[in-house]
Amino acid sequence: MQGLMQQHQLLISSIITHAARHHGDGEIVSRRNDGSLARTTYRVIEERARRLVSVLRALGVMPGDRVGTLAMNSDRHMELYYAISGMGAVCNTINPRLLPDDIAYIIDHAEDGVLFCDPQFLPLVQAVAPKVKSLRTVVVLDERVPKADLPLPLHAYEELMAEMTAIPEWPQFDENTASGLCYTSGTTGRPKGVLYSHRACLLHAFSINMADVVGLKATDRALAIVPMFHVNAWGIPYAAPMVGASLLMPGMGLDAPSLLSLMNEERATMSAGVPTVWMNLLNHLRGTGQRPATIRRIMIGGSAMPRALMEAFQEMGIRVHQGWGMTESSPVVAVNAPKPQCLALEGEAQVSRRCAQGRVLFGTDVRAVDDAGNEVPWDGKTAGHMEFRGPWIASGYYRMAPNEGEWFPSGDVGVIDKDGFVTLTDRSKDLIKSGGEWISSIAIENIAVAHPDVAEAAAIAVPHEKWGERPLLIVVPRPGCMPDPDVLREFCRGKLPDWSLPDKVVIADSIPHGATGKILKTELRKLYGQA
Image (tube, rainbow, N blue to C red; front, side, top):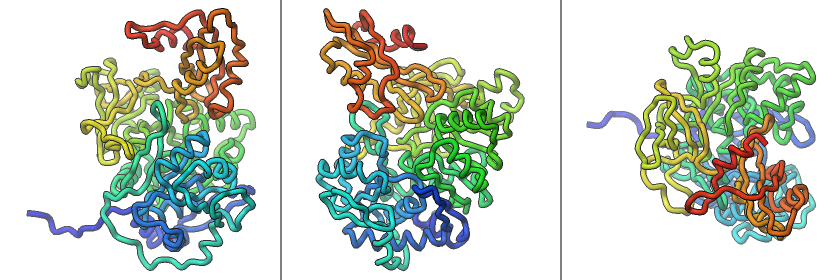
């Protein structure tokens, strides 16, 4: 026997429809490039998103097509989020911090036919457009068409919007339809695409709106610092309108003074971002004596939260929650919210628990396994490879073979204690995570060994107070050569994004190898981990 319940598909368009109908006056405040603030509401966003569907159709976009965005957080990017997925197409959010070659690869691999970009990224588009076969149209998110040397039709967003009328209602289709595509460089080699569904995004938004997670309310004013090209801004553009919380969009203003100004002027009550952002803000607060006036809680993710950061904000009366996940998990899988028994902890025990990655959200599950795939005990001591599963966890990568089994390997190594709290201890892959951005050690090594004076190279992560981790490059010279460390570092410039350049280069007589000939990076970390 089946229940007598109505059947409604879980579609992303239903979020903005609900927001417009029941929280129509909820604000979206966006900082433009000139520093001015643009104000709109969920009611207006929803109508404009329906009008944008008409624009997309006029540009030849069909259901299932991929549409690229190269943009920061703004009301216009929000409209794209809802219009593209709402019509049944796929919103491919592209990280503008990547190398042009990787951006060209992503557009080409996704087969984006139309690309929307912020004006400041137009030079980047000009650089990659000739390398991309699929791209046929570019739309600049501005009032008018700027001057540009582009071998493609170029349109202004607002001019296109002015020519169209809104579709009368949102299309209905299966909730498992693809909605978004985000490429991660969190593994070696080329970026890999994670293809989200409507159902997954809605369930994730429901989950992070629980009280122990982000816990947004209609009275909140959420400052979305995490970029919308980073895993759907951790789901905040869906979770906020779901409950009617106002959204504050910083645009390019991610420096500490700009963020503090927006926080205080617009009365932000919560925010989310990577540790680097909060360390920069903390240093600014210490240097100026200023304070966030209305912020009461922040969520930190992307890399491990420094203990000093948590303690500093706690002294200001701001609750800090750490979350754990990755692009492949939409991203939140665990969050550090206390259980009743945690409240009894004191001193170092409480601090250690607060610095853990947290406990698993309903809907997902996590385990740690040994090299043979056997689950290790939850004793807080036995480390294993962290894996997770759930309805917003990827089953594989776009246009690649599906993942084997129901558990997805995170690439992290950690322990789980008796209360179910996850603490990461290492990474199974030798990636470096700096300021929330992944840096491939192999990419650095491949460039370094191309230098004529270098015989062998290895890159490892070393702790950094500001960025969490930074790359250190260790090289063995060719016989008879003595390369200059500064010259080697400059040799990498232009071949890597500037933020991926090794901070320091060490010249070594040899690099340790294992029995199979692989470099022993565990030994390198022991030798140079505090360099």
